[in-house]
Length: 561
Image 1: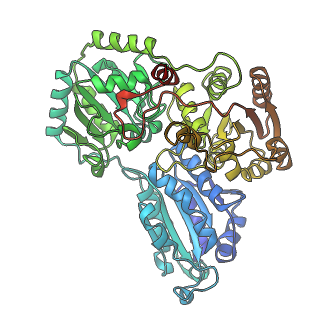
Image 2 (image 1 turned 180 degrees about the vertical axis):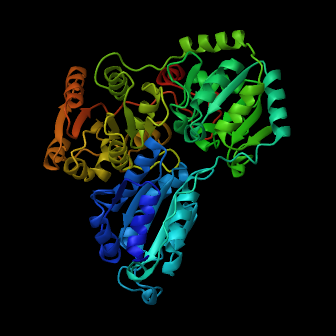
Image 3 (image 1 turned 135 degrees about the vertical axis):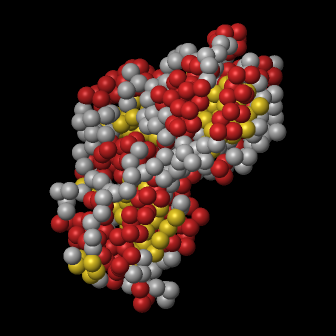
């Protein structure tokens, strides 16, 4: 049958099982929006307040479900406003498809009104991108985009379509979406044998889990692997929830703001098993001294990650779930009682601590965990509150912690929370924000109110750019350059003006009451929590230092005595 390019876009989205898209219309993409209007009973469109919110919402939808998130934008500034969200998804391996429309083919390259080379701009931050100048290739290009976004290590794909292509007719033949196969052909028998030999020989093994274990849905296989190896487990920020954070074997996050137990344990282990991690600089600290006494065994689907940031002794390349399945089938039960007992003692010696009185960031997170019983999807912005959310909320399931890890995008959280809430209507979604981050995307509260989304926005408000100020305090001799945010902005009034319910909390009791009321409601709710600007994230490793040198405020006090 002969249909237009715009109709092809909608039909291909339906082929791929897309039920929701996030976007903002404009002149170049009007033909697509006109067709979207005719299919509004099949595909829900969420109109965000800004295109960046649409890309973050698509990201949150994808992270919380494992499905592809879709965002739409028009040409020029509409397309460029997606860039930060696309880069965020790229750094954290999130499958999204961004569809933009451009000026007509004859006007390309002529500095036409609202023309931009969005394919050129996004080339370094996508798995692949396309500009479709032939309508006969449009359907297969969109299908290919979805397959690329999901295959192997996921990531964002952009499809740019000139406006005249959306209006041109061509023959369209429906197709079923191709199944996404796990990457297994790279799993070599000799690599498995080497891995098994190393696992059996280890006396002090440690398992380090990253986002790859979440992406591959490998939680069950990971749990069995931990049991068989009888080893402790730490994780990266992106690995939260892959292994149950309430288990005795779990020792907390690793790296700059990891627990002392994890940092010391990894520094003393004789085998580090890296499961779906990329050895970020925030984990490694001083790369030469990281796990210096250990052999390193890495499991990863992306061969480019092997030996990129840290040299390893052996690796198995392929889908994490499949690798762990094959290892578990052949790994004999081992016991490391003495090693686990030693780490248990470290956990008792170096617990995470914060003041016992007053409203603080850690208390806000811990109380949120207590009241929700760990049964919520937690989204964060970026900064101190993000680290507290990683430290003090216990994640029992994958896809329940959504945060911009690689890019560190302030303004990510509220858009992502909208995407997660749309995708998980029966779940409670809570975004943890700092006051600096809230300023960057608070306009999306209007989106949440319009869509009647019952998400909760907790603002950890210390009137400063908390993490930057923490660095200024510790490493810049308290020169607080451009980090003080004390002004006349009233977040409660702003939230109410945008259509949300809002509370202010200055004490522990006020916060608990506000959170309970928010959880009872079915409307977007903001809780503005006033905390002291001197609150800091502990422990901390100085930039580029050995992770075993993690210090706390108590350590600093002892040094200054």
